[in-house]
Image (tube, rainbow, N blue to C red; front, side, top):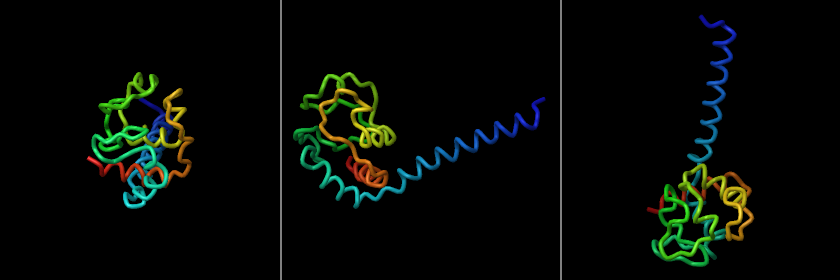
Length: 131
C-alpha cells in the first residue's frame, strides 16, 4: 500500500503536467487566424507563398501544419532540413518560429525568429486554415 505522501506527490505531479499541457494547448488554441494572416503578410510573405505549389525563396506554406518537414515538391531544401525527421506539429512550428536555428541547426532560412508568443499562436492558427 502506498503512503499518503507518495499518492499526494504523484497527484501533484499529474496535476502539474495537466496544467502545463493545458497552458501549451491554450496558447495555441487562442490564436487568431485573421491576426495571423496579418503577421504572415509582414513577417513571411516576402519569402513564402500560401498558394499550393507556389514556392518562392522559401517553400509554400500551404498545408504546412502536419506535413513532413522538407517535403514540398520542387523546392530545394538545405541538407539539415532534408535530413530532419519530424512533421510540422503545432508545437514544432511554435518552436521553429521562435528559434529556427535551434530546431534545425544549419538550415538556410535567414530568419531570426518571432519572439512574441501571441504572434506565433496567431500565425499558426492562420497556417492551420490553409489546407
